Image (tube, rainbow, N blue to C red):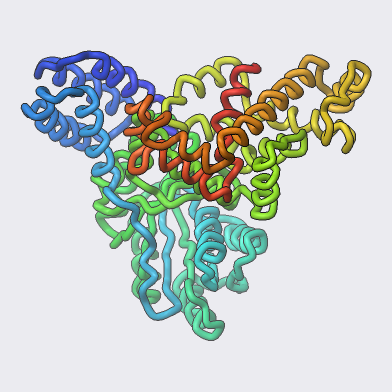
Length: 494
């Protein structure tokens, strides 16, 4: 997401960082390029004007131009302004009410309301332990109610039984009654949409809102529609008391104009971003992290969260024990590759790693994608248990068998073996440096953090020392400790 905008802004700020001193004209010239980049990203014109004027006014202040690192200062100002534009802090769902708390989903037809309803219900069930009931009020679109019922089965959330012929207000009344009888914590109402904003749609939503008194009214908009999504949001905000926005298909939005304009247009925060088709592909929208991604600063916190969700506790303990002994076989490598797949694959990780934008672009240009991980897993899977435990057994004849079994070439098998050898050497080095705690210490003030202060600043509070502590000190996420090394190995191999 935001790839086009991120590339444009990275070019502008790379030039600023490369200069020892900045004049007012330098800053104004850079801001003109930022203005063009935002407009090309389909950000609403009034939003662009306010943003550029505010940043320029702050950036030409004497404390910036006389700073030791004026380029870095300007980037920080832009980062803070982007965070404010996107809403400041993370806005969570307001569930502080007497159950059942009602969440009403509104939006145009085709924006992803029904799927988003199921995704949020799954999130509330899995992450917050809430008992959720979903009800479809869409009596216009064919099979809309059946679709929600199917999704409910897939995510393990109850849906209101369908009664043919009932109208939206009747369904909402029945849903409220059922939710009270079943001691439901959250009732989610998936309202009908239209192909365009019309008064009949608004009247129907107002009637449902009046009967259900929702605590949250979330507008679902498709980010890929760009400026049109902004216009839709403006129309809804003028007639319905919105409390937040859900942006769908953010993973395919290279421009990002809808996200950057939405807060200013609706006056309400973006609460969730849909990041894929799977029913767990939704995340709370964090303005600070998104601003960091746009400016190429990465998103280490998201990597840690993905690692925590992807790493099995038993696997982590076993890996930590083996690392402490300096052991690392093909089974361990396979575990690491699968963790990377569960965390979103190479592209997703590269996009969140500070300074990895160019590497991500190189991967795309070379045709390298997440199929590489699948092929590598297939190669290891074609080895016998003995060969996985002792890769040194893989002679020429065995390599040919493994290549044929995995549908790859012998040179691909050799690459895996070489990658394993290098990682095994790294594990032994870690042991010599005092194990995981020694590795974490290396990332502290006296180690790489001091050698790369720019990168350390980009990672925010804790810097590289924080990352070292999360990846190694606790020995709970050993896969994360190796992840940058793995990614670098893979990029070099291709």
